[in-house]
Length: 171
Image (cartoon, rainbow, N blue to C red):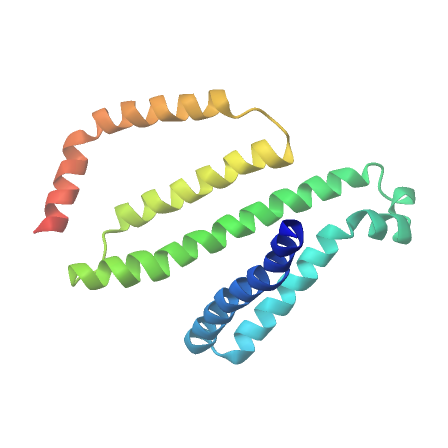
């Protein structure tokens, strides 16, 4: 039947494709950072996600309600911390692989720190938007509209400076 064919495809092909992608990523990271570092990092990620997924059971089992007045605040703090750590890692990866790797290689010289700083600020702004939307369940439409208008204003204000920076990169 068509439904059986759909489930067969989902059960066999999707895990195979995902396994291939993660295998390639794991091989690249192992070549880049070493087997021990990648293995330790993957174990820490699995443990971290298991703690997050089983947080309610951990709170109940450890009877944290006796010691902590609002254990759900610990979960919110942990979620915010995870987003900030993710933003930090994303900015480090952006600096190392994109700015210092791809862009520096194509330019033949180091990338100006102004561009790296703009990239880092962008990553942290995106992380803060995700924290507001996903952790605190706040609407972000007004914030994004204000951020867009602020970006236009900042772009007009820094037009000459940005023109000089990109002209310097081109030369």
